[in-house]
Each structure stands twice: as structure tokens, then as C-alpha cells.
Image (cartoon, rainbow, N blue to C red; front, side, top):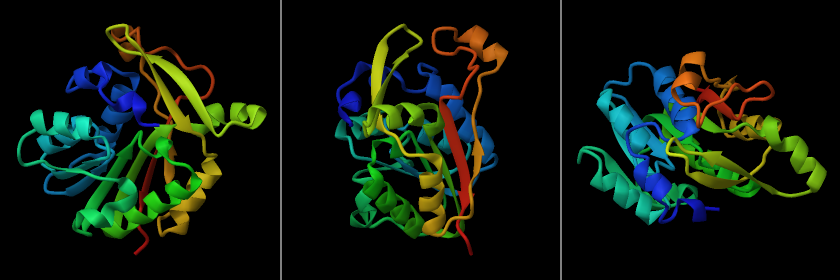
Length: 232
């Protein structure tokens, strides 16, 4: 599942500008919806090359990033201020990293798509254990409602989609497909309030500026962002 992220020029080049559709529709949307994060402790799980961690740091947050791909962590460290703390580690084994368990916010963007059902549950529990009471989780990922019908028809447990970059490269993302009711049930089952769900859509101005990666979505949007808090 992580092969597309290892030693890939797409991720090496995608540092602090816009290169992928998710840069706008997931990363930028999440940073905007978090609002004022000055002084907040934020855990970025599946931080990749540190792009979102840097965005949040520039807004005054204290950020800790975790990723399982060593190349990504190395890129993050090389391109980030030293005040951002990065860890090479497995999201499913956060306790091995001895991280604090009082984060105000956890974000996990385009990460849970790599987990099967049992791993998905483990990751949700790990997040719950590292948030303070009332802490907030922002989950951004592929929208399962767009692909789940195909999953049921062909019997596959994973799906692949080919996407474009701004510089006209193509890359393939492989991911597990979990129905939205499964996602809701897992997070509420480990102690989160029922999440609000946003399906980010590109504006006309964004489509005009980035026509190679953004198009009008007339059916079901590609991404889903869930915003939820721990029950107190």
C-alpha cells in the first residue's frame, strides 16, 4: 500500500506549493477549517513530507508528525523548522514512540486509506488515547461513497485511481474502501462524538487556476473530511 510513497518524485517535489488535487481539497481545506491554532498541540499522523505540519506551524501550532515511510520523514526534517518534531513510526503502534497523551488536535489526512478493517480500528484507538478530553480529530480521506458501489460489484478489498499532478505527471493511489457507516461506527465506538462530514468541492476560481488537477465534480465528490471531538 505504501509503495507509491517510497522514493517517488511526486512526493519529493510536492513540498510547499500546490501539485496535487488533495493539496487544495484536503490539506488547505483542513487548515482553513481548524481556524486559529496558535499554541495548540497538534499530532499529524501520516504526516508524509511535512507539508501540512509546516502550514500549521506557520499558524503558531506546536506540531508533532509521525509517518511510517523513512524517506518521507527525512524529507520532512530536511525541509522543516527544527521546532517541528518528527517521528518515524507506525500509526498502529503510537505507544512505542512515547508521545504525550494530551494533544488538542489530531489530523490524519490520506492515511486511513492504507488500513484494512482491523488496522482501522487500532488506529482509531491509538488516536483516542493520545488526545486530551474534548480533543479534536480531523480525518480527511478518499470519499468511500464514490467507490463503494464498485467495491461491492467486483468483490475487491482495494481500489486504485490514477490522478494528475500540476506538472502533468500521473500517479496511482491504491486504497482500502470502507463504507461511511463503518467509519462512523469505529470512531463513535472508541469515544468520539458523531462526526460532521464535509465533501470539499473546487471553486470555479480554483478550477480555472489548476485545470490539470481540478475539474467540476458533477457526481459524488472524491474526498470526505470528518470533524469530530472526544466525548468528555
